Length: 124
Image (cartoon, rainbow, N blue to C red; front, side, top):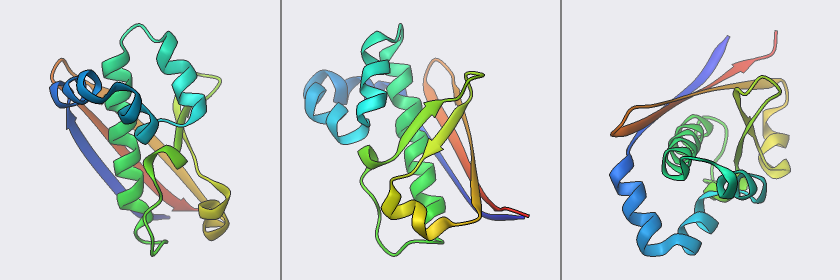
């Protein structure tokens, strides 16, 4: 059963601008260490960063059902599974509050925007 849903859409030009102006600070604010490694090798860094930003914002919106305090973006990770599909990895301090809850993530890009949806559902 779905217990929470979050969605976020990001203009890619705004992510590009933030990356150009505040590169290191912005990537430190948004990306986990694992994501930073992938980001440095990615062929389209701006689209990758925009998608991860949208996914994390969507996750935080959905997490509002379970948590009182918003975790930092870099504490969350959106990594690819063995099939190349995004999966949400939560820090232990957050995951402890979500026993029996699974997440699903979907990210999509166009030339101008990135959008992400995160769903949390009870394990049944």
